Length: 96
Image 1 (tube, rainbow, N blue to C red):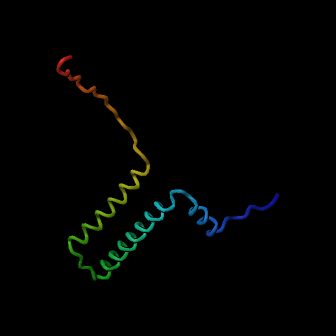
Image 2 (image 1 turned 135 degrees about the horizontal axis):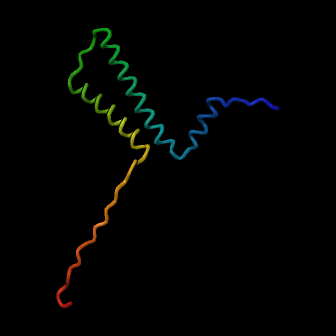
Image 3 (image 1 turned 60 degrees about the horizontal axis):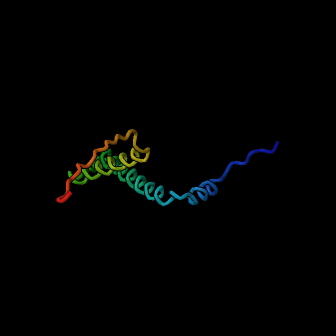
């Protein structure tokens, strides 16, 4: 029985790039990676006692983190959708 060959990272990424959702995934990965780097940088500055953020900077980081989490939740799709049908009132026209 022939041995299975493991796919190289290059092969895996080549397949990913062929996916129709690649641009969306790539964009989200960039944002997530930038956010992780920013948060890590802030953590290092806190550890070193070299942290003097403005309230605006802090709030923006928190907002970005929440938005990213909401997008991930939304990617799972809606859990439940309720629809109510409302009949439009019938209008009588003059002369009818």
